[in-house]
Image 1: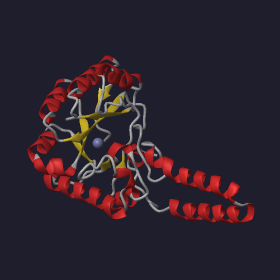
Image 2: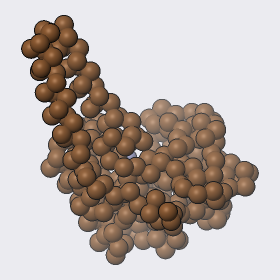
Image 3: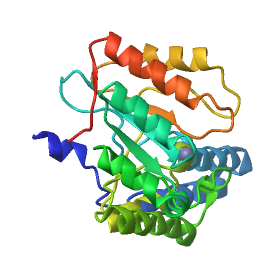
Image 4: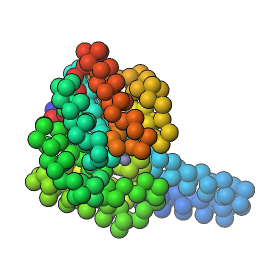
Length: 258
Ligand SMILES: [Zn+2]
């Protein structure tokens, strides 16, 4: 198998979970009828949990294929920077240049539309783009319906394509949550979902030292590193620089998967 075949994991059967959901609920009803609620109720709760939990697991393949590491043995890591473009983008680009690193920016469509010059600057310096939804509805992305998910992914794809001239091939779910309606949109736009293998939990309230320690602990050839830009806590640049230093110190190279 060649490397590109394993890299592009576009969903082929995005509704394959549906017959299993129907079957599980039929079995719950049959159990309830046959053995009463003491058996039926726990089975119903368990069956619902079975279909809910994968939504919240960023590297779960239950609803859509995902790339969570780079295949192969090369001493390369893939830096992925979410949530831009932002005020910090120019400084992030300077940092990446200084460490001779290439990264993929998972952009929010409406933020890209507001600052297309920053998107152009990413491309001009040899970085690549990914689809990270149009509006980044982080508290409710997991429960959006089919139409809303389709719009989030389509509008971001169209916005980035209009700026870049070519459509992105990568997609990352908002907060890593992938519900059953993501895969049909990925199939439509020929997108590959990207997870991660190294993250620092640099959310709302982060301590940069701890974040960098968590990321560097998981740094290895083939790692996909989750980073952010423009967060309100203001630590993203320090975290990115520390990770770039760690990558260099370990003899790894930050490059793009192609
Ligand atoms: Zn995000």
